[in-house]
Length: 118
Image (cartoon, rainbow, N blue to C red):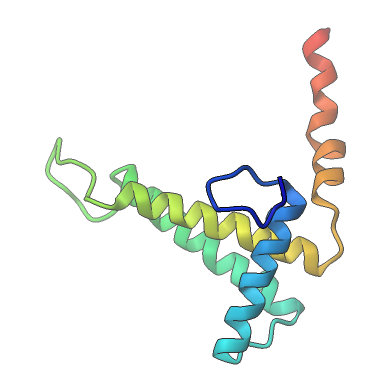
């Protein structure tokens, strides 16, 4: 399946990265944003802060709530949206710096899989 298939179809990491880049470049053109190296790093930092804020809301660690009060409506969706933002901006930063994310994950994380057989 091509990575430009409808949204419901599976994506590859390179395909997702390309599509995120296309959206980010469009957004930058539309709003006059200069996406230099600092922007990629700072934008990722901003999004991580928003992710933590959403996480705190979902886990009940924001403004005091009465005991047993449910998580606010939309909090879980907000968390999911911030996870998507962080992932997208991480892919953008990696791309801007020439990082092969798949190779880095294989080297740094998946190398540990051999420990499962021991």
